Length: 272
Image 1 (spheres, rainbow, N blue to C red):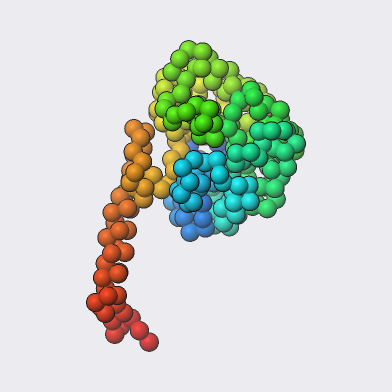
Image 2 (cartoon, rainbow, N blue to C red; image 1 turned 180 degrees about the horizontal axis):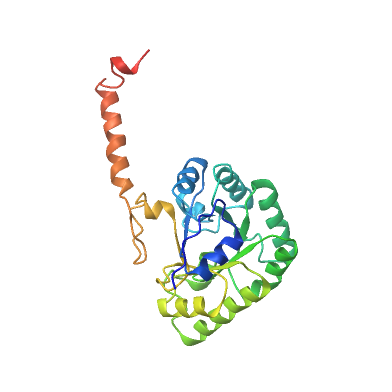
């Protein structure tokens, strides 16, 4: 039986769980600044992730590891000021939660108080269970992240597909169930086989958001710079480019430079 799509004026963690139970897919995109977040929110995206991918696309680092908690708070506060409808989830950056549950709680409190974000996201399963519980006990919503976890890139040594072997697949399923049990409101699954992701989504009641995890999950997330084609050097199989902004912007900026050099800009109607 099909269920009519509910018009959510404001997306909450409860809204996402309702969407899953109603069979409505969840849309999620990253944003890191006020202007972009305003556009994403107005377009009707359900969840905005202030991702530690800002380390790559905003600051030009090779990995997500260098970005700091202060920098994440800066990006998150810019996004929150723009948003009227979407749920804003903020990544806890590398080094701000792994060492000790008290540090994880302090980092999460800073994000919530200083940025106004609505939830935090952490990478990992059983190994960070105590940190997640500590954060949840303080009333802060937590989104999990399993599969390819970019903050562990030097441990993995590659960005290739995770959980292809039975042992790792079984651990991923166990971790997803654990995250649900301790109180996470959703889980991101990154770059794992589609069949496994579908199995996980069917085995837990909280939403599963995929990136490179096939269509059998409850929603999808992409980095907005990739989806809009601003970054022309990143072309994984899971990425669909909805625009080629790299080409459009390069052409427009080049034309501006030419017009300035030729004294075509500004013309008579463009001055006081």
